Image (cartoon, rainbow, N blue to C red):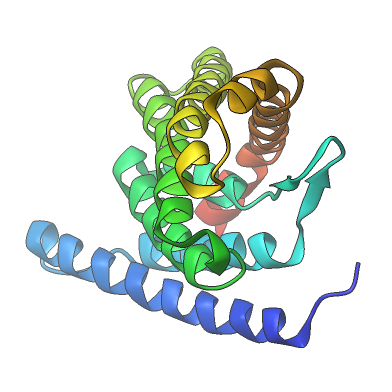
Length: 214
């Protein structure tokens, strides 16, 4: 895959911006609670935010039957951070990544793309995070990821029905006809792949973070 130099530069700039935003947010919130920020939280959220943006820029795989739909693994670092620190930090990361994506690699989609990305990933993050943080266990992790993937898919179906006719000037009947053969399978595959990878690597990342900062 040929990666434009401009995209690599944008990835670096975006990563720096993401790191700065996350660090500032963590410092402000941590100081209100404890008087000093958590080094572990700052470092982990900053690295995960940067990683999410870099993955978003470097890995974009078109769906065979609809090239305008692209898989990217940017949600994986966000989901891992959600499991580590809770859904609200995951939502913050989602907002940062969605905005940066909307003004860089997906600039053509404008504000609608930002809204759709934030809602889809945010729904996954919120559902999975709330389930998992109520009692961290293997079963809860599996349930959280499954529910999150289904929520993301359902939200994308709804938003495609609303926004695609407006944004792409496509008749609603055409969008409905695309649901079963294209939109639903794509989003199930994307969310499912990200959920599976998150499940596989989460324990390793969690132990690595603990080993570095505890």
